[in-house]
Length: 356
Image 1 (tube, rainbow, N blue to C red):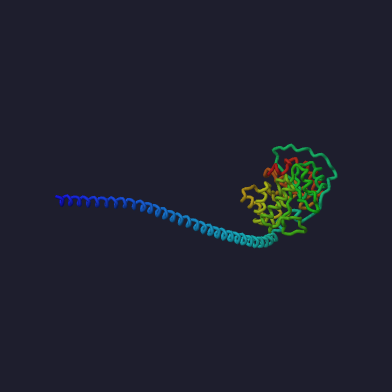
Image 2 (image 1 turned 120 degrees about the vertical axis):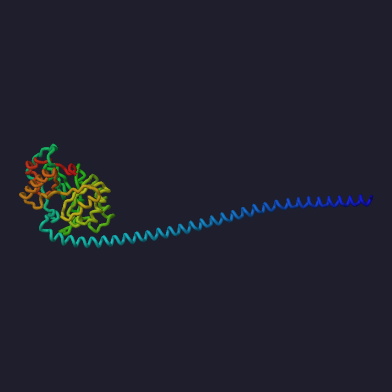
């Protein structure tokens, strides 16, 4: 009996020992699982952080590389543009020389058939006021053909007095100031309406005006010159060319000039000192109206010639509805204008802004 009791007790103890051992192992395994999970989380976060670091580092390095490459491309493009501009400038200079040579040959052939402006020949005979001064009745504008008479080369007070003594609505076109005529801009400022007679390069000069626009002038130089003219003559809205047979026959130069005129809201009236003028083509390209003079009144300064030219101007006005004539403040010219007031009754004598 004792043996059985002892055997049962021993068996029970073994079972309890086994159960306790299992409990300890279970508790130990639970305790060991927690640090493993934490380790996995930490490793996972480390991997994510590492990947983010790699991505950010790659982006930063790639951005800097791309930025550097872009700067290199821009620098290369800038160099190409500068090289192209230089090449174009050289082409323009070459073309100008070629065109000028070709035009001189053409003009030699056309010389017998084309009559240039009197100021292209640089005649400096100026006018005195007409001896007989009478009041010219103010014109009431009608439906008659319009005739605008532009008087070029105005630069002195005596010329202005002579022109005003006619009591006619003519248009005075002032030469820019120079040492020879320092007050031309100041005199123009006293007038309600005027034009500027801008010196441009001619094929041949007896003497060139100061600050003459030349075919070789850059766009910047021409813009600066027109800006200065606008400062000197703030009311100017119309400009015609003084001489300019070489300049106006050069398409590149005329493009630069009309661009500058547009910027300062100035209209161009072509004096047509050459039959080869490129003004019609250039103005058409700009979408602007081309307005030239129809004839010169005093290419020759004898009275009979001037009188016949006035009759021709009136005939042109009657034929097309208007005409523009150009003359100069020579004594004979002003005298004939005054004496022709009866002829001029057939037209409506106006300033150029009423036509263009």
